[in-house]
Length: 333
Ligand code: GTP
Image (spheres, rainbow, N blue to C red):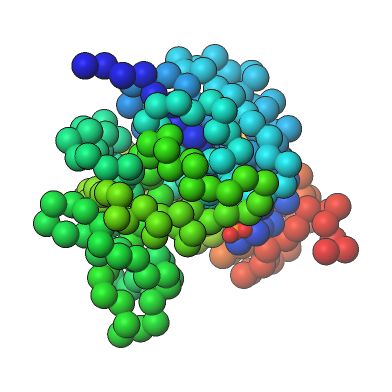
């Protein structure tokens, strides 16, 4: 039987850990292999999902512009939240669109989960929801859960202290929920799904779906790098070069170049993410760095372990090591 479904993509966070990149671009639109993070998530949705509801707030106009200009095979609604309502409040805010079983997915998770298989797993259980589950070495930064042999979640624990974790299985941020769960979320206030709602669903049947492969929560620049390297490796590529980009040098490993960039002779670029419209002058070195949209780098510059915000101009001969350069308008911040 083929059901039509909706997916809510949580996209309203401020992305503070991803600054300075998120001063100008909301995290869901940050490019990963020349495609916004949120498009990786949308691309992984099963065919049954015919409508995507983007629960947004911070820099919503940029999300609206992005989706207005695109023709996807699924209907996309970008829905505004009066103020950031947290993961549970965000879903409550789009309640009017949710009548059947639905997905809720974080917009910044890059993983190998097969959502079709996850849905099949869930449909065989008789519960009110499911949470994707991923095994980590050190669970102390995460919400963990215990899952029994039938796949039923037995208990949760938030950010366990070292030595106190009862499990190494974490909440991987893809939920399948029944509409009745929405009745448990109080309206008009900030609610955390993980802290307030899921624990209250345990006795009604909440299931954990474990998967293998990779899972990266792109919350910080270091994890965006990890996702960039992982996806290039998965695709068997050393580099990715966007349309209209000219490269007059040999690229190092794990480099993605956006559209309409120009790299002059003798520059040395490795392990870096370069957004659209970036110019890199002769004999400049860029390593382990992210260069935002339309950054202009003159000749003989060295940029290492750094993030350069959109549209900044880097003078000839400059050395930028371990820095995060903010956009000019944020200089007072
Ligand atoms: P930090 O400020 O760095 O913690 O980032 P964040 O604000 O994105 O928070 P976090 O990484 O914990 O968010 C996980 C997911 O939930 C992301 O996809 C966020 O966009 C989303 N999210 C977080 N808070 C809200 C919210 O209040 N409303 C909505 N709609 N989405 C949210």
